Image (cartoon, rainbow, N blue to C red; front, top):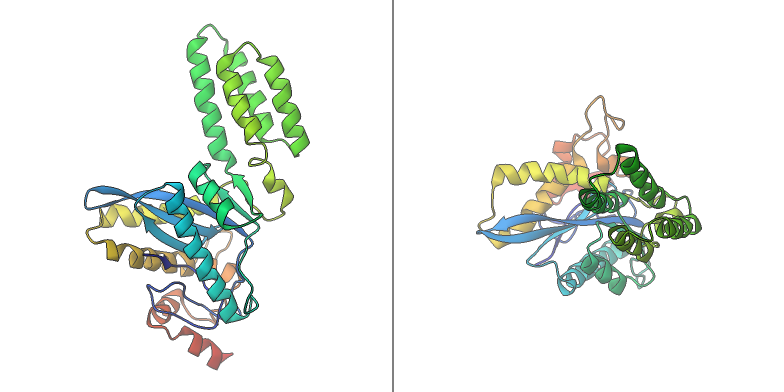
Length: 305
């Protein structure tokens, strides 16, 4: 069963485990650029997956899944998009018949998830996290080094620099050119050629972020919020009831979005929700949390505006 979390942009506050909850009619607009990831969890000894969608660190949606195949991703993403359609139309950010259509989504490179996003959102730009790309390159270079123990340290560093230059290319044309040059340079090394072929195939995934000012080339912002979820999962252990999973995700996301940053943080004094435009009108995050869970926040914000 789907359940949303994070922020709705509309004028209706819903209960804790509903599709979305609202902070304020003047709050965040539906995000244009998304991050999407999933993490492992456990239900009665069986592995499950927690699917999350964010705008930077701000969590907009989550749902648990039994599988990470393309069909499951497609169903889950469709529910997220439907929830955003409803939220956007209710609050007036979308016209009554207008559908929510994000411009880009950054993933960790899982093909099933990428295919599902392409199917559900026509014309969306897929981005693959460069950090995940760099990790996969490192695995290839480690494999190559083991087969060439005679190599000197500076030669290994040259390899790393050559591959990093591809992922850090300033344009699609420069990316393609650097792949070609490295294919020529390492034409007699099948291990390296295989990785270069993968990088060539993924040239759009690793450069699409250059088309958008605010799209993220990395999934690190969502990863930071997910570390907070990791702490919750360590404390709570495995799930015992399937119908408890999504409400817990909602509760975690609300706290994640409403708690204030520490005094020494760049966003000190603000919550993620406020940073992205929500108006809490001087309320503490605990007050806002309580009001979100009982469904009264919108009434309060309207009467105090």
